[in-house]
Length: 486
Ligand SMILES: *Cc1c(COP(=O)(O)O)cnc(C)c1O
Image (tube, rainbow, N blue to C red; front, side, top):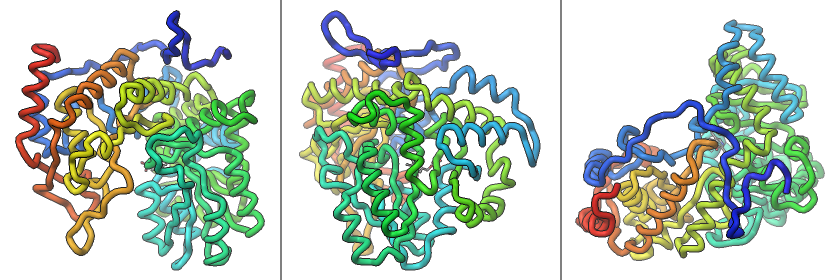
């Protein structure tokens, strides 16, 4: 076992994820009594986005901008060189990107979606197509805004909830070939591969798959774009799951992945625990097509809409991505939670991926019709009984069609995010315990309906209510089983 092992073996043989860091600055949390949690979710319209963190015990909404920073990142922020142009801080970040991604030309942007705006404007023409393993919400919006049509060509395993496929984020090569044949290579703006495919459970792709995609791209003279927002975790899974790379360093794996992409972009909110983002390439022509859009939309080329302090922290955070003990933290805690829940019979997306533990609300609440939003109901119920906030990733996150019906989501998921180095093992055990209790009492959970439904991105600000008095019944059972315990 290497020194970088994220887990240790206990006497009973169990592999336990271990925190390879110590806590030096802490934030006080509150675990409010269940009656107060009930009031809070009513006030928040049964939408976990509308909760106030003062009422939340573990905030598992997202990993975006919520990873813990290291001591080195915080101290780097104090050294920031404030300058509109030519800041030393920027050059440190540029050097870190050259080292970590192996790309020499760098464009800074204020966050991931800004990179998507610039890449889409520079390379997508009306009527173009963009094949990809799976979309991310902001990616799809920017590409469609620029006249492109996206094609999600994940393999058939991609959406299977319970699976042992190690690379559910792979692109289906046959589907890619037939898209190119059907539309012609000149209609393909670029092929996009997203590391640790966010919306299908943080699932990675393999280098073998990327090589096959790359070969087809080169044969057809098509650009390859890599969304590297969750690249550290994808590289970690490659090392764990792909035979050829068992002995490789994370740096070698990152360089191999990035080496196949013409353009690499990322949200620094995920990859390095700070706000910000960037676009990198080794191709001067591609760089020039994007450069002036950065000054137009983001800012001068040595800050790109970011604060200099964040740029300093980002440079350090990017280098920390090369450290297996850092990038293993989130995946090893997720794996612990997923394996425990799976063993208890609670339906979860397997194998464990990056970003979070994804509970299959469709299977969990099979008695709640999809148009009564099982994933939203599960998110609300789980908050009531645990004080933990997850994110609905199901039909509430989808849209209402012209005919007034919901566009039902492919899968109804409750995502419990594990931001890097934020939660401890006993907190993780609490999540597993309360989810197991909820599963045993699942028949008490009912559906939700909208009382206030925004036209766009309704999941952010929409307000709902329960379709019956199920929350009261759930709370009564909780009090019966747990007494005064929180
Ligand atoms: C979060 C994310 C983005 C968008 O990044 P922001 O910094 O939130 O704008 C793009 N792609 C992926 C895969 C992401 O996870």
